Image 1: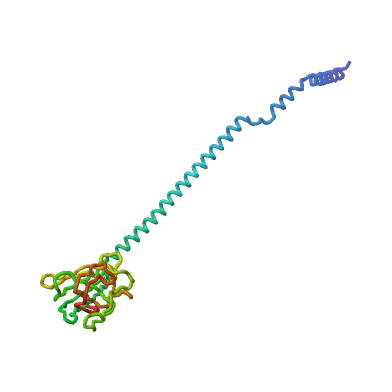
Image 2 (image 1 turned 90 degrees about the horizontal axis):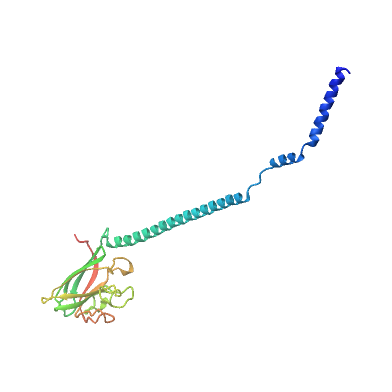
Length: 256
């Protein structure tokens, strides 16, 4: 047999052996190998833990966010309260400051008291704008000792011999008669002026109810001194008796 034929037979035998070996190989190995190459499914417990972790983080973020929101709202509320308090505080002090500040251009008025028929009352009464109201100062002589009703009246008219031309008490608000410090009173209720044994009476007080402005202005009104004491209660004029002195309130130069 030639060497070429022997070589071909060897190649053929080797091929047959290879085919036989492949048929005898366990196919499960391929299946296991294929199984090992499948993607690994996530562990359910592990996945739940991760999901729970995310939920916890979300809850934490929500709580933190809510806390931040509450804190911001609280700060905003505090700021609003501070603004309101500041405004209220400023308004209160602004009003008080305005009431207590002296007027920039203070005005003054004066009344020269003359006796009514058969009486001797005479003197002067000044009205000066000051911080807190109008300062009323007076000095009147020729009175009997004791208190005498002392009022601003509606009309600046002393033409009647008994002073009745001055009308009733000056009362633009329509209130009941009262004392000068009463909450309810006539604007003209100055109370009493007290004369000593020598018949001289002095008066000096600041009245917050008096004004130089508008329909309630004291300018041009009458002023009456009465024979008796004002009881500060009886209506409509305090039962102060007859009119012993009368004056008309006119504009005066400011005090020096």
